[in-house]
Image (cartoon, rainbow, N blue to C red; front, side):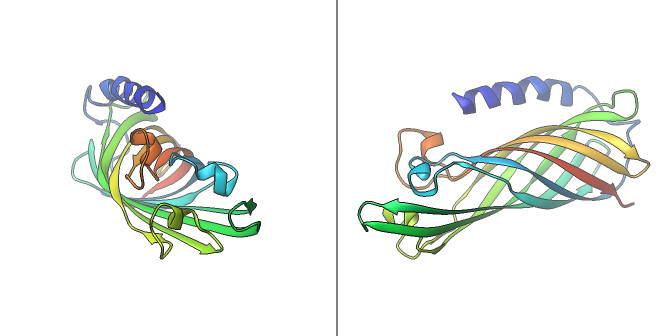
Length: 207
């Protein structure tokens, strides 16, 4: 249900994004960004091992504009979760650390600007995940990955808005859905080590 709702909103906002060219918004070939926010991982039974699905990742991005509307974007984020929980099979408390990094390579298309200071965008592309459990983490081993490391590949879809703060600095708000299958579950969301990310960031229009 969450995925269907997100896709509906992405299509709705995407209608605005694809409605025209970004002619009056600041146009720069190279952009650098930093961001942080809240992330909810989707994979089934994760809370049984880590207590909560929610964490607070941070990341960065670089993009190259092939036109005022289309940007090739490379972005990276890291989500880390530490927990101490009682394990019934081991009959003791286990200290677990889950570290999830993902890299997104894709396209962002920007809309026409609103009053020359604000515009929306739609992003989509491939997502490459790098997952590692440390200390006494055993969630991945329960899924059949005994070495505690996996590197699945999936996709991401994002929508967002940007507003100028300074001549070459923008403030951005973004919602991103990412997905990459792992393990067994009842559906796309239950099998995915991706999830839903909502964040805020700063972008520098270099040149």
